[in-house]
Length: 238
Image (cartoon, rainbow, N blue to C red; front, side, top):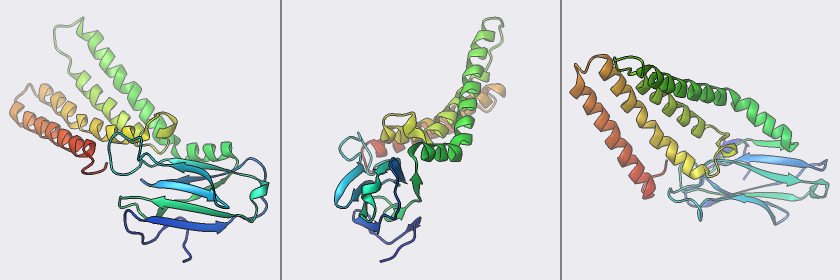
């Protein structure tokens, strides 16, 4: 059945989708293709020979589906006219999803990926520096004043947001060795944002509405622990 790439075709979760095509001519040496998986186990064959695959089924500590990542496959002049086969399996709603395929020099592909995502990375780094700077400055100033400085709680909030942005980035595999744990941990980090923000606002308002903010903090903590427990026990996926 002809399909368009990128695109989505009807494949029930748990079943394997197979996409085939004939490699065009010419193909120079050191040519690569790059495919972004979408919570899928993926294997790429050229003329029946496995070239590369990605699956965290045997290595992920928890979760239902493999995390999304970039899969690189090297091609050469001898591959001209051969059949390339892509097999994708997912138990998630991403079953049958086919992302764009990048083709060319490996470094050129990496530069392309970086150019598409560098703004988010710079944003995450700047927020991380700002957050740590705020926390360090708050503790340093606290030693020279009798008034408590609550700005550090806002700093922890910014740090949590920056970590979540970095861990959700499409380039996280370049910085974190285990993308499955990183994806799950990013959701857990996000739950600290409302908690630290509520503590900051509560203290700024001199605890006039302390029990209201405490209620929201406990709800965020309970929701975070519940969601983490569901992910760790593989009842749901992140």
